[in-house]
Length: 236
Image (cartoon, rainbow, N blue to C red; front, side, top):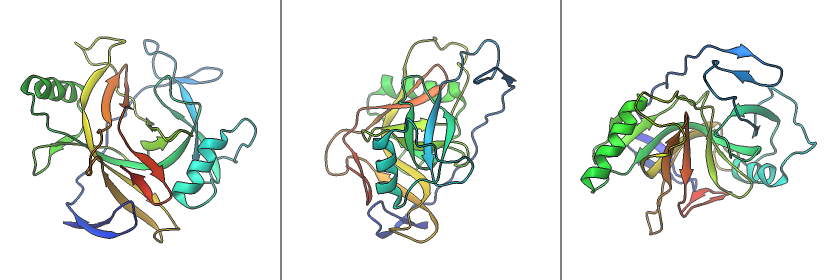
């Protein structure tokens, strides 16, 4: 067991997070404006991510005020820089980093055919996965490279993740991986706790819809869900 922190800042005891590193080994070549991982892969879609680091200067010109405001609210301080990160096409051009993604816990569907389809997709993608004590699938990620982010409207996205389309999967098709029961991420929130901490949020505990996780053409993305992003953390 590990002592973690809920999004509302309360200290709670949760199960230990067992997480690993997603295999992201890829060859690259340079183009004038973006990096293309290989000749058969579509050009990367890069987005601007507000973050607390000092890797690049904070670019004010053309920035998304909604994303910048959301970052300040959620992380309890002004962003210090913007970096370019890879994301699924259709992701807003500027987003706010909520934290490094540790893991996603997916609902174990009671529908047998849906459960088999979900597991088949996860296995085909060769994601780092395990089962928790309730039989739900837990996907693990490298927090340094893969980030949980939000656009200015409060919708979650994932940046820094790419898995080539496995054999047998169709380009242009979305594959449902499961409803998202919980998300765990690492972030520093000085208005809640000193230093970088691990946070875990459980969705729809008091009703509402779970966000749904999909894979399409190399990327993970969310659809739906009744949640909001507040100064205290994720809610709903």
